Image 1 (spheres, rainbow, N blue to C red):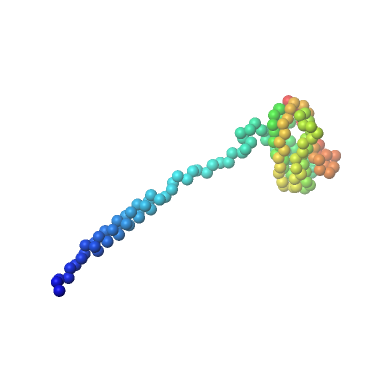
Image 2: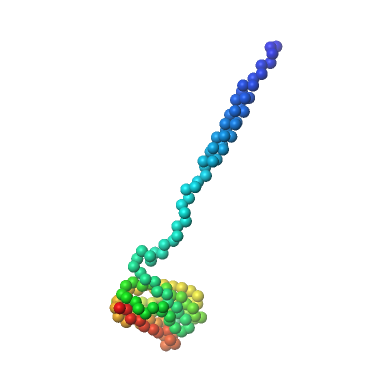
Length: 144
Ligand SMILES: [Cu+2]
């Protein structure tokens, strides 16, 4: 029957521990944010590193539009777009090309690419689809 011992010690300790846990929790939260995300990279075209010149070619019903006819020898990627209402393709023949090279046939609104190495001389360009060449899809350019 002694006086009840008031054991506040553990209770006080528990409160202090809880407070400490809150502080640790806050500190942990503050340190958990990641700010090291790399900035987004802008994509670099694969052709940028190589010595390839891109030339836009528009194919229509029934003509080719080449933006330039002053090409010098080197590697070129013809970027073809079909602005017409018929399927088209680009065929090219000239120095360094055995027979002819041709792109895939693309439908209206599509794009495709044809990469060739050009040497000095005259190159013929036409559309190999149906009778498009006779209808006017026939042109030429000189490479210096
Ligand atoms: Cu055509």
